[in-house]
Length: 384
Image 1 (cartoon, rainbow, N blue to C red):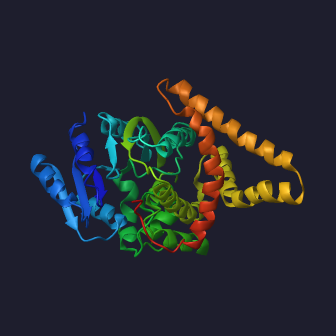
Image 2: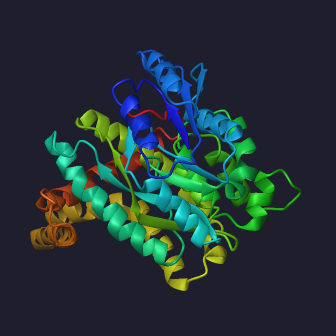
Image 3: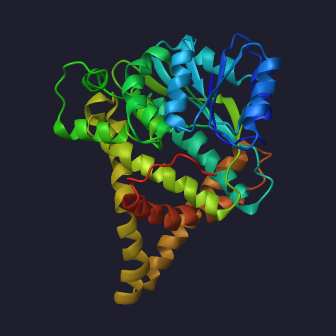
């Protein structure tokens, strides 16, 4: 298990103690302290004295991607589990991940299920509780049916070592630092010719694939998606295990929320172009191909659709009904998702907020796409 850490003194003790309270005991933990300056170092040193199998590495600040790559090189395990330094795993999470890998030799990447650690604190966190449920229980479940989960998230993702080993050297030697998990996910899908190129073998790629891969590999905001992309090749699958639960801390302020989602949107831009260059020929199911490219077109045309619906139609054409019915449709979709959440989890308290989260996704996420294109060269993996 690899944990990249930067300034996480408030959570890191709980995170590591949860790993050692796990029902699965044959675990090697590598904690990479990436130049923390808030007292994290002293906490890690104390934990290393308590847990003999905990390997703590202190380094100057080099970015999350290089921290993960160093942990990969130090680790010895057949399966690599990556978690963020603010994610607390459930007792049986590691056992579930290992069991999924063991029972499915085609599995190259596995996404766990994320719940919110701080869902009860602030209104913004409560809204994200419903959004996380949809993202995992609906979206990733659907993708997993086809062995094609598009992004194994940073809060908990797992990889078969051989599925990503060929990419680590290239990825860690690049100069930029955002998007690591999305990039790792995407690599897990990649076809043999793309993987061979990444491993520096003499294989001819299309100019587009080559440029997109090299561009995505330079940033830390795309590792999850790029590594997962390896698993969508003919050799590996990317799966979702809903029983492998982790609790993650989400931003409670709008500033933190926007910063995190801007980073995610940049990662999507980088890796979606790379994956689109080969996904049409590597996905084994035509429906999954259709869904992938429809989503791709929807994301990139969303700002135009919003401008048409909320400006052109009502103010230029005078058609306010179209705007009204479109908004009602978004609210109804959010209500349906919230009801589904409540039916599956009787303890869900914030399911009605998915309607509001639907509107936030509509306007904020589309706006962040435009912002992401303007700052696409800026390199930063931190939310805090």
